[in-house]
Length: 192
Image (cartoon, rainbow, N blue to C red):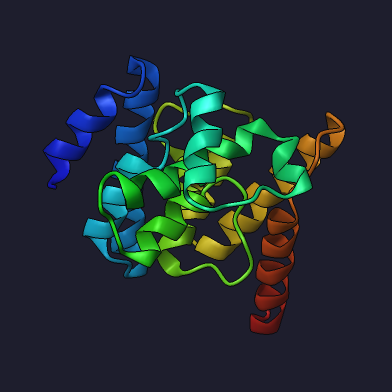
């Protein structure tokens, strides 16, 4: 499939607001890929598809996840906001025939992150935070950081997410904590 076919596919799976977000994430991902040397075509595709299951019914998400042979851990079972990324990674494999592990993992971990993320995974994670329609507090700081140092931007985003989830007394997935620790340790090793 090419970009226009992916865009057509997701347009039928989501509302206008989510569609615009997906297009914006794809555009941000391509810009970040150019800066950091990631594969621009993969960034474009992963950006378009990252939320492909975001607006389907929860029962359908759970069925896709089960069909993919994935067993949700306790945090995932109690955090339905994580389901779309997991279901999306299965959907793009099983329904779209995407077999590129980097794209699959970029969709799967765009919400939580994880330790040992690839460059493309980091690009999609960050692009989701800085897409053009985002307007949360400090979004301009995050956008600036994203084009100065990808790891510092991710650390900033993870601190924001972990603090927000903690404040609202919501579960924090171990992948997010592992990602935070991994990036922090690597930045300290580099002297940042």
